[in-house]
Image (cartoon, rainbow, N blue to C red; front, side, top):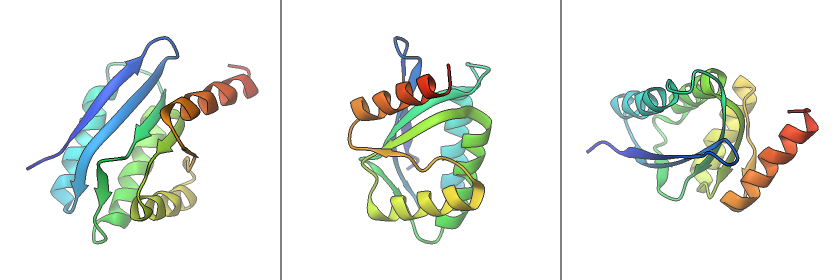
Length: 128
């Protein structure tokens, strides 16, 4: 059974909070997972700031490197500032690897509130 991603647009801060409920184990899973991001994000017609809550998310070892490619593509197409919350050790490993390999965000926060603070601070730092 395919997983899902719950998206919420925090309009006050203009930040997307995404909560994926996935155990990615196959190329078909990756395609569906990526398609869920594309379907949701195309409504904004711009890069958005993101918090991803990873309590119910896992990447299988056989698809981890390929997931990193998809993750980088999502970042480059749709994301400006991004924080992860609660990744497990495998997700953290694949995230950090793809972050270095494809030069995309590896930021992590202890909570959604901390992630929002980090994004707001980055905007301020960058004059946005």
